[in-house]
Each structure stands twice: as structure tokens, then as C-alpha cells.
Image (cartoon, rainbow, N blue to C red; front, side):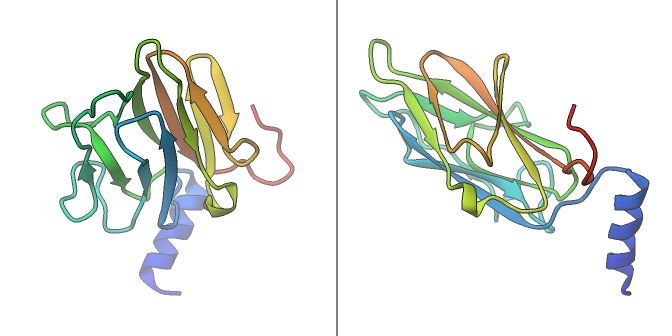
Length: 160
């Protein structure tokens, strides 16, 4: 067993923050100034801005809602693509503001493309949705939608 594999095993068993494998989730958007956003984890990423992985969101378009991932670094603009380190849990927050009097912003993802070794939950206000059992969410008013990635509960244990 090489050193990196051994380190992953120790961290997994010890619960010192679970590590995920590389993954990238694409969320398609309708009613927004961009067609999609991406979030995920990669071995070479940090939890801050990574010039070769993270992409800033384009400016707002006319006649559309506004969507941008909240940047964890307050002096930088919103993200279109945000890739973080492998350490779990991770939370990506998406600022959504539908056009006043317009259609909602609809978020869609392919459940078959979600990483098998990560539990992904969409959180909007008091609503929580397992992203494996739901593949679409409509935002009807200005809100923050969060994507939470966690280590799944061990088999045979109850979810909280």
C-alpha cells in the first residue's frame, strides 16, 4: 500500500474529515444568465481560488434571472465553476434571483452522473433534497440554494 492510500485509509477510519475522490457535478439552468454551473472536488484543488480549475461567472444578461456561486473569498466575484479540495464535508452556495414577474430558475442534474462515494444534498431554506432521488428544483424567489457533499453514512446505520 503506498503512502497516499495509507493516509486516505487513516483519515477515513479516524473520521478526521472524510476524503472524496475527484468529481464534478454539472447543474443545468433555465431562466438564468448562464446555461449551467459546475461544482466538485479534485485532488489538486484547494478550498480557495484555483486559476486552473475555478471559473468566474459572467455578468448578468438582460431579461434573465441571476445565478452565481457565492465565492468563499469575499473579495472575488461569483463562480460559474467551483472545484474544492477532497476533504468532506463541503458546501457550495448558489445565489439565485429569478427575474421579477418572470419564470422561475430551474436547476436540473443527471442523477446517473453523481459520484457514487459522496452523499449530495440540495438545501434551500428549510427544504432538503437528496440529489440522487430528485433531479430538478425550481427557484421561484430570491434565495440561496446550497449543495452539500458529505461522506455517506455507513451501510446499516440510520440517516439523521
